[in-house]
Length: 634
Image 1 (cartoon, rainbow, N blue to C red):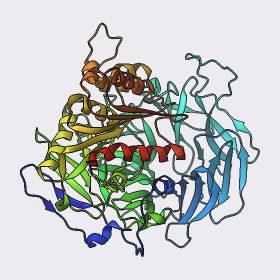
Image 2 (cartoon, rainbow, N blue to C red):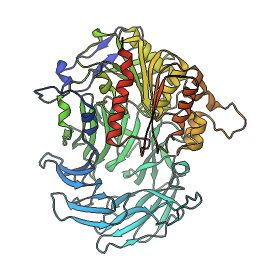
Image 3 (cartoon, rainbow, N blue to C red):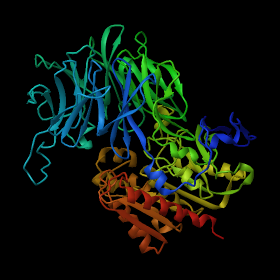
Image 4 (cartoon, helix red, strand yellow):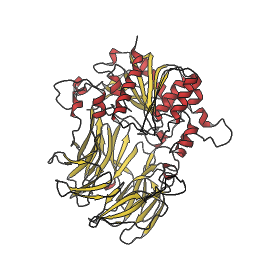
């Protein structure tokens, strides 16, 4: 059961589609629940969720990981075999004959029969790997060993190389191919033989993701064929059969830019040209898999599409309510699985025929069914310039719009090429239900620049300008409709959402509390120090080495407006963040200290861009709720 759909158009009467299950849809949708539990921080961080399902080539089995805990499970696609835990591990993959499931732990690769038994293990550093049609060979990507302690930029010590592991002897062979390049991904042509290989100039995202190339490699003969430069941030390689024979397709940023929406690029082996197959489509591809299938983001929902051999275009096969991740398919593309979440249901593995229906095949967080969730509404409205926008509104549990106005916390998604889908929004970086349980209404807007509406939507507007206006338009409409109290507004987010929160409080004093999580305060410094420097420069508009300023990025940087901030700000950041370095948070912290603005600065040791340690997640949830609780104090 998804969320209610709300017409949110300015100057229009409010229209809602009622739930087919009445109010009961908020408690354990689709299940009987005899009691209601109180949502705690521990329940949020300890809820076990499936990750990266993988369907066996014959379509009989689905393997998947479960986190936290890092365990691997196998279940029957038809429900004939209940989920069975294989043990500790990550990254499951199937043998081509579907007899074995592989997975890895630190320093080892393991293999076990789908029904259980006959486990074997091989020691060695294994990162990305791929079992081949040859039952005795596995491709392994790993760097050469290095004893050098200094980091020398010009030395390619961390480049992953393509290696062939012989399962009989344990010997590893390293073909002398792709010298000086970092091997990113490998896909074997169905039936065996040729490998499609994606490489980059460097293992570092910048310049690595700017320099991908596509190759064909025959491990039997050592022959290499070059397929030329690929589009920026290329990945998700797959083989499929077109009207003219074999094709290799991948997902990348829509050319020719380095920032914007994703596209499916396709190379027919008979011609070698990289063609954009999704130009003009109002959806955004997420991943490709066997049988020419693609998972796409479609507004607040997801859907499965298939590459049409005749037209070389995507054709919808199956719409999916809510947010879906990691589409996987049998070798013929007839049976599929995804991990999927809806408004009131935690993520589970769903599997079945590609035309549907898909049936739940995992149940890893049954304790969440005892929680009464706040009503989650779908919103649609128009921006000031007429652009159609969507988003979500979550109300406090047991409340309706008629109980408003409420304190309103706006949570901005990351990216900017991210989105909010109609999923259960619970975790520390998407704490909608967590904050709703404390009495707030929560607004989750999808402003321009994000995912789910095609490349044109993703590249419409400038940072800090049109997307900011889109946020304000939605907030003002909720105030106008009596949902939000204009004197009790808060804003927060992580990564790009953290940037927008910092930007917001430098533009207006309407917000009474803000959360900047792993956010950007200065685009010029981020272009110079972040791991995605070139991408950040494209977003910010310039770099600091382009002559004497002021520069375009200065106008888009929250730090330039720090002297105007009056809103209390909670700044949280991981100490080891290489995506958005800690210096971004330190810069704003020092500015707020200089201007005597109420704020708190929290650094989580050992954490990167994502907060992963259990105690840190619990602490962050508590701080987030406490910080925004000031909106409801007398």
